[in-house]
Image (cartoon, rainbow, N blue to C red; front, side, top):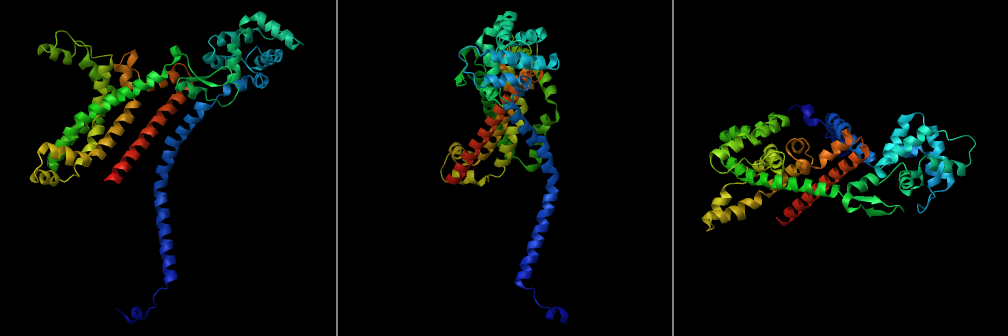
Length: 417
């Protein structure tokens, strides 16, 4: 060490603190720069689509854009009797102001969802316009009623009034089998129109069965893998991960071949005299559950294996040496330590299950379709984006609730432990 180094004055505490703060800021900026691409990717591929989905679930622009004068007149309508002649005149003016039949078709389709028959009514009236010049509201009302007496029925006017706002809860209410009545109050749908409650219960029921079967199959397999040497466990883990490298459509097609009446499964059961005739394993709930368990089983094995690998085997040996039976030691010592893996794997499999579409659509029957099937139906066939987004928001809410329950249970277990 030189004399200059020895005689160099020590840095003042304030200068040292400033230098450390500047260094910390530089590291933080560097970390932010490194994570910025990932944050932008998540923003534009996850958060923005979710936000658009939630907005579209409550957006209702068709009627208010096409019939602004009618919406304004019906704003003060009590809904108990036919609206005043001014409403008929405003409707005729709004329909006559539409640029072409495409605009009339959009508003008629929207009204037809709430009042069946509104599409033909609106389109027939649109094609009959203009009704005349310099007509009073009373004359317009008489001409519209003469053109189609259905304009004298309240449900069609209720449909226009209920959709006269740019934002509406109607889609979200319909997703949980509710609706707005004639006076605007929320009420339950008639029993013969309540469909989404059953569909949601079916979705959760199938997902729960798949999750339970995956847990029963994955737990002993993950435990066995955790007891093997690292080399043998890695080789067998490759076999567990093989399904990840195969397309879901390919695996579903393979199950169609295996489960059909003349498939390998039925032939094997018949050759072993376990059944007297081929079993119905395809296009029903059985085929859906079998294929979903096969596809989702690795998602249960991996969390369980990672947790079980961290449990010291000496715990079981110590319990047995202290007088406990091996089975009691396993359930009282080993299983509680693997509950985080059970919770993580169960949550992952259940959340993936409730969003399944391809497997139930190809292997299930009409009574085995889950909520995602109807989201695709509203998107691709009915072109009802509001209802599709409302059902998607329902699935998102169910996922967030499940995750919140899991976090709460995990914190409770941690505090008790």
